[in-house]
Length: 241
Length: 262
Figure: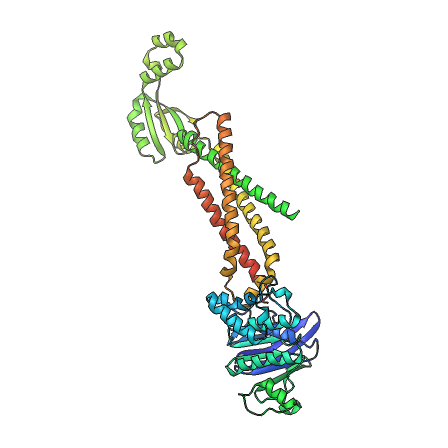
């Protein structure tokens, strides 16, 4: 068990966002959280990150009460936030390589890894550009690259594809899927879930101040079968085609 | 306007540091000469000449007597003659039996000693001759302590405003670094070095100012002033730097704790 929410209640003023929420996130899962605007997706995500604290109840992370993630934990978690967090005056490459710089990786090695990742995301031409010069979609990709460059064991992504077109969104979901296949736990909150079904994907939905795990039957999406080796989104494209 | 305030605080820090050093310099000079010279209470006792040996054994039995000196009749006659040379011819004619035997004592606490003399038949009279300048010493040490506290306060306030300004400027960076699991020392050290340089510079200026003050003071009050040793001055600079780094670290930790992830 990675995360466990025990009777969590979260209020903002008089408004309750969650009431008696009991929810757990297992290791090695690919989970998608959906819900209408204002339903509490970002709040739940912020509670997972340790930014928000529950008004009542507790969140257990790796068997211990979560108050704030320790630096050691944080180095194993890749966060992708809805709003960009990059250093505006620094280059794209610097922003992406920052986690490795913190880890003490030598410059040539971290730059090589950063360049490779950015090339995969189609940002080779932007390596030396300042972060503030990027478009919304490019910023999202850089955020993605920075979160994934350490190959974290847990990826928490809040609306990671919000500013992207379908093709770009599929590309990023493909990358997340690759990480999942490598053993990472992926948790995404999104307005626009992938339009396919896969047995490995757990879908949660926020409703009535709680979270419900959706049955596959409830999700009327094209079925992709059991092959985890296939790319999630490329299969998706195949189905759509 | 904010920068003016910060410059003002920095100047206050330098001036208070200089004042602390100056008052410490005066205190150490006064303490090592004036106070040291007359640091003990002095008592004079007139004795019955037949009981000198008894009084000696009494004095030796007491722990609070630091030093004593017995003056016989002749010594007292000579002392008076030296003190009042114009009365020399009169004093010369007087027999020694008209002069007392006295004891000058240096004791730890004169009133306690005088109480101890009560009821001793060999003592004809006793009085306190001198008490050390305790008030002066208290005033000087109090001034040094006051300036030291004000100087530390100025240091904390200077660093607090510096840290607030830096926190506002670097909030996004701190937040990102925290989210990425950066150890706080990684952020603290680049902040600490400029602050440390600033404190060393300000302490150096304070030492310089106090030296100017000391030279002016010496020219006004002619006395044998000993300058503050380089060791004390270096200790001041090193102490300022250490206290500054410690204060800076505590302020940074408190501020960094409030920074949200991402």
